[in-house]
Amino acid sequence: MGYRTVVMYMEIGCFVVCVSGWILVCSTMPTEIWTWSEVDSIVLTTSNYFSNLWKDCISDSTGVSDCKGIPSMLALNWDIHMCRALIIISIILSFFGSVLVLVGMKCTKIGGSEISNARVTFAGGMNYFIGGMCSMVAFSYYGNKIISEFQDPNYKAQKFEIGVGVFIGWGGSTLLVVGGLIYSIFAGREGCRSSSERYPPYQFPDAYAVVPTKRAPASLARTEMSDSRKSRNTSESGVSSISGVTSVTKTTLSNASGVSSITKTTASNAYV
Image 1 (cartoon, rainbow, N blue to C red):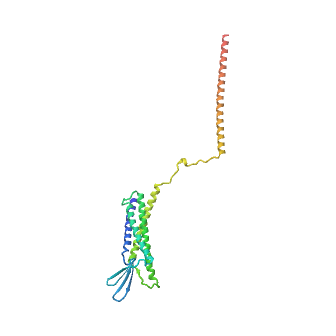
Image 2: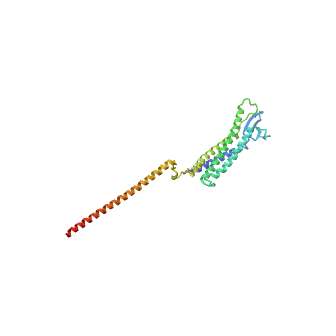
Image 3: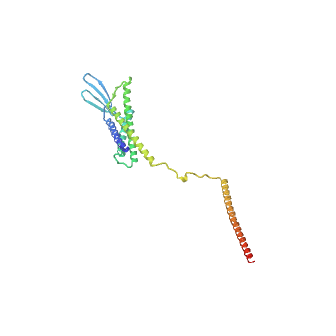
């Protein structure tokens, strides 16, 4: 099994994990039991109070429940508004992360080249990761607020406990964070490595490897004088060699004339 096949199966698994986490986070919005409290009024009737970020509800042992929305949004504390905003941001980011991952995954083949698909997948993984962190902060803050109020002995109002909606939110946020982190690691490594291989470092040609140094005017003058002296000595040695050859030729001719004179003298003696 090749590396590309392993990455493809990993992307499919992370996509299933992230979509499951996104669905769990979305399901916490209509869930009414983020906090709950059981209050005994009489022997035969038990009242249960529960609420979420949007409304407060009450039910009894007969199964009748009544919910009332929060009357004023501006009268709420800042922490409720913060939790609402973070969860909505998480849902939006996870949605766009799903779209980007579907475009950039290797099994879909919707995008362009391998480098562009890896970068698109990396962007989708970062959306998942950031969305999971936003929802994790919201659910953790809300749960910590419930625990601190329950354990505070000076808190005189109605005390609540953590409901099922917060636990579902923690699970969905964990899936988003884990899936987005794995997406970001694998896709980011492939995208950065491909871009570095595509653009190698520039190497200068051999002609520019050695840069000639600038000489001073005095050194240039000395160099020219030495060159002229060398050329003059070479020309003089050439002339002397030519004159030597000429003298040797004259000597050879003189020797040849001497031999001819001796021959003529011998011939005259023979006639006598």
